[in-house]
Image (cartoon, rainbow, N blue to C red; front, top):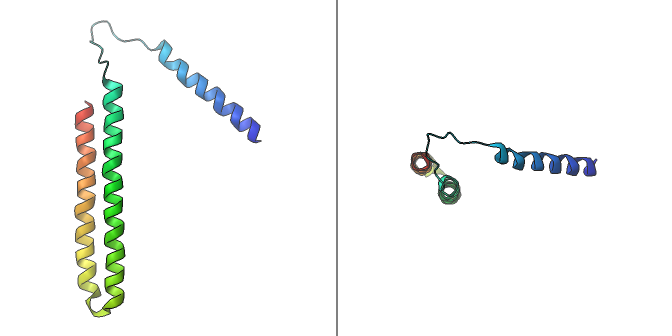
Length: 105
């Protein structure tokens, strides 16, 4: 079964690389030779933003759990501040996604 999966994967890979050979551009549209590089740079930039957001959210969650464990009476206030911080971090990641889509086009 593993050999069959490997063969199918190899066939799909070869067929997908052949699609670019048959691609044609319109004669009246200029070709953007940097489109692939823009897409790669946008993907790497967004990946950095996502990793930073994930690290920030995990630190906020850990600190909130630790704070609630130390002082259970302050847990509701800690939870409100945690949710506010998570929302702000997530909005920054979504803003990075918006910038990535704006820069690709």
